[in-house]
Length: 524
Image (cartoon, rainbow, N blue to C red; front, side, top):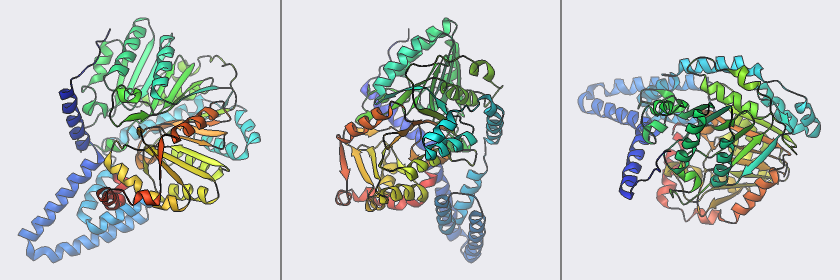
């Protein structure tokens, strides 16, 4: 039995300080700051020591800017990303060249990219499409079109599944523990954050016991956890406890572009019969055992039925990325017990940042473009490109009730400031924006017109939409859609509405931060 994890207030403050420092060193923001300082140092050296060469430097820098702009304009980058690079190339050409070469070099993960492409290609045929897609097409041509797109990306449509919606981390945690206790064959866990505390210690106790009983227990967590949340090489410690464990792409500061491609997924599969996904990680703030930013609002779903196979395949693809191909046939051939009373359609899907299919963004935009009555959205961040902003505005301008709930208490100051730069334009188009007064919203979900929705890990920000491995489930006419909308309405009562008048009361420092950094948003 693991001992309860307790720390004193002093230790908590020290740990918080270490986390902040480590996250800065290992983050995109840290990288941008370091290269910017190097650029300033170079300019200073030229001015102070090589004054006679200043005209040559200006000429070379100008020519370099023009060349870089031409290369960028002809690239396939997102329009908002192009604007960011154009600003950098114009103002700081040397800095821009170094940073652009670095971020485009795929340093540290070319082999990973090739391996993932190979795995996805080899395992796409492991799951087949049934007549569920055709039935969905007949029920709703728009949703059927989305299902065809997702199947083109390798994600089948399933029917007769049972989906349970959890409006809080506490409820998901309780159900998760019950299902883990039932495990007889295998447990697959893939989480972005895993941190020692009451939540993880409780889960780990069950996992160790199940491993001793002969259950195949596999745990995968993102390598950023080893920066400040768990010890370096924590996977080896878990293996000593009888588990199979891996860290996805452990980090080294500034030496790898791995920081661009994190495993942000949250997947739990038990015996091939039940799967969980949503925003909830394995750390105590997600179940409100610790207070970091006020009350932590999150959501998740539990899926039963054939759709579980898609989550099993997603896990095995990531598990196999650095080694031998996992036993896909063995685990995907497990007979699935049909749930009672399941209705509607479920499409689990993953989003890989190393291909040209921006699935997460496209699913969200498709829902917005087809909505007739309303689209209600939970998101912790709002750092979006022009296309997503246009989709939100156009839906509202068509008369659709587009309402977003965002945090009232931010977890990160820069993203919070950047989110507010989008508020005026959205408000002017009729989009309604609310902030959760009790604390922080970490949920990532869409619910639309009482019939379709998405629950998963995908935020409305550049990291989720372009840089991270993500997952979610598209839901059509499943019973829990009503629960999702009821939860949204209940949460709305705890929110303050954002208006043009309230924006005028924002701190000038926050407005200034957002104004200055908006051009760099895709890189932060």
